[in-house]
Amino acid sequence: MRAVTQVSAPAPTVPVASTVTRRRVVFVVTALGAFMASLDLSIVNVAFPALERSFPSDPRATLAWVITSYGIVFGSLLVIAGRTADRLGSRRVFFAGLGVFTVGSALCGLAPSVGLLVAGRVIQGCGAAALLPASLSLLLAAFPVERRSQVVALWGGVGALAVATGPSLGAALITVGGWRWAFFVNVPIGALAWLAGRRVLVRSQPGAPGATPDYLGAFLIALTLSALVLGITEGPTLGWSSSPVIGCFAGALVVGVVFLFRSARHPEPVLDLTLFRARSFSVANAATFLYAMGFFAMLLGNILFLTSVWHYPILEAGLAVTPGPLVVALVSGPAGRTASRVGFRRVLLAGFTVFVCGLVWFATRVGLQRDYLTAWLPGTLFIGLGIGLTFPVLSAAAVSSLHQNRFAVGSAVNQTARQIGGAFGIALLVVILGTPHGLDDALNHFHQLWWYAAGTATLSGIACAFISRKPRGLVESTTPVAAPTADSRVAV
Image 1 (tube, rainbow, N blue to C red):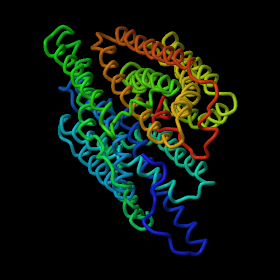
Image 2 (cartoon, helix red, strand yellow; image 1 turned 135 degrees about the vertical axis):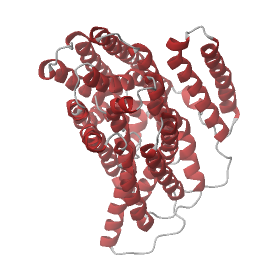
Image 3 (tube, rainbow, N blue to C red; image 1 turned 90 degrees about the vertical axis):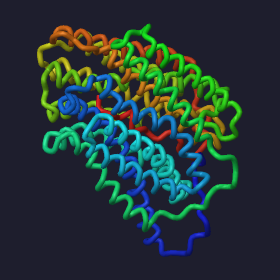
């Protein structure tokens, strides 16, 4: 995926004021794409308790696919979507992704069953995978080199705003109109971006003819991940030694080996295995995967705890988790600048220490008695600070040792590791929480969940000790490659 898409012809001379206005509108349009994808992350977590009430006959393991299906599809298609944007033109792929995401959102809102809701989420994931890399490419192409760092930071800031306001906004929408509005809200935003984008986004020239991206490989990795997640979620119900569960794991192993074999030989693979020759890249992506496994489980688990153990209404639960992403949004920028001066390793180790302390606080201080100010809020603030010091810096560390022309694809692989880790995390949440018998048993399971998240974060921190000290690649380049990500700011 190239960072900048070439335009088809030199732009005609236009007044400076017109150029400035067009660039501002381009920023708004591309940022709306990031806003929708970011908003959907936090809103769906807040909507999950309402989904459980709307579909009482469907077990939590089935409902979890509303979240995991999106992550699997998004993670599997992200790299291929970026290469498709290079091949066909970023403008074309942007509008395709915007249309698919908006249609998927409408289908989710109209879904009469969990099966159709999951299908809508799969469509959303396809749209988001096309939307994000194309929007960033269009944004970079619209601005001169000396302004790109600034606009990408602002673009990431819009995602921060969406996720920071997502829990409270989503809770308000769900309280007034039900969970379906967690998805319907994307429809007017998508329509606005479409109408404005048709006027200002420059038609981009397709890239030089080359090999077709490995779409079959994308299907194979999605199939592998789906089989693994299905085996994990069904294991407690069917038995870990049952034929269907063993079949899922065996099938995932076989298809996964085929995928790796194909990736090693395809000219445009889903996963460029040569990237992993760089130690910092390999370590940072392993750390991201481990971190995401606990992080995403914690996000949904916190909402479920507030609504099922403390019996908070959805609106109150949404407001209760809002301070976390606000802290993340405030800390992410300074954390990145600090890492540029002192190195990734120190900032990451400090961040993981704070993050684990917040989870340990939850596991040892939160009980059955409602105590938001002295039990819940301190842990939330600790966790928010830890996330702000880790996730954005991990994204930068993942590409720091790569050559400049591989920053974009390296960043996409890192986002893929995050989404896949998150899908596994949600599957494991279902296993950890199980079906408790009474509030005391439920509290014990949530404590286990927080200890589990602390454990994955500790392993991630240990891995980060092997990351190179200095951010060499980023210091040498003026092209931004690691804008703060939406996932790093989801409600905590």
